Image 1: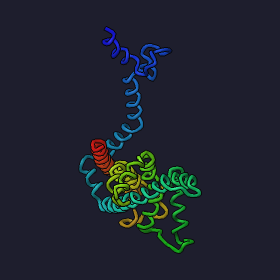
Image 2: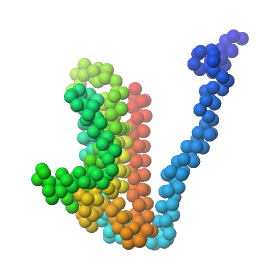
Image 3: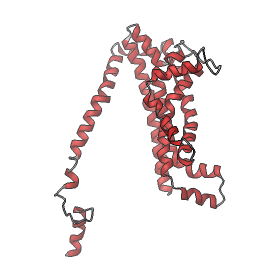
Length: 292
């Protein structure tokens, strides 16, 4: 009889404290019911995210499918998509490499000023994006102190986007690097594996989900960026005019339906890229867990 009661007692008291001092239903009622939490979270998500997205989708469909298609396939829209996607993909790939390098240095190396460097990484998050554009203009504009003129060029747009998107990769990878077990690396080294082999077979599979997530966030931020490129880019059609600047032009000409249509395309591209990268990352993570 005693043995049959022990599992029930354990289920009612998972802490093993005998329930002393804990009211009945403590673990299920202390923070509210699951339904209440899910309801509040869903309501807040709907107000902050879903309703605005529904509003922009409704506005983009205001002129019908023909108007939507004409807006997103116009010469100006196509050129802005080409510039935006080309620069954003390039920026995401570059930051994928250098973001990992910076995260590695901050977690694996000790050097004077390490905390200062770690804090500087977050500056692009804190600064208004227009300040980033001013910084780029001061450094790479006509009066460049380093003799490099990138204003009104794709290189200037790319530098501005690299500046504002680097933290996404660094902050995505850094916690994973901190949690990695060094003993696995040491065991691989003791078996004769060189550094590249250890990185490729031991570290990269564990880091890949966070790398893809950071790169996806960097890409999504880049395709929607406006403030950091507005001065250094100059919005030259077909050369440096990104889609966010093209949307601003449409709004100035009172074409809100066209602006909404282009916005929907950017949202769709961002969502698809994030969904694909995170799906790949989840599969890699599950495969890594099974292999362990």
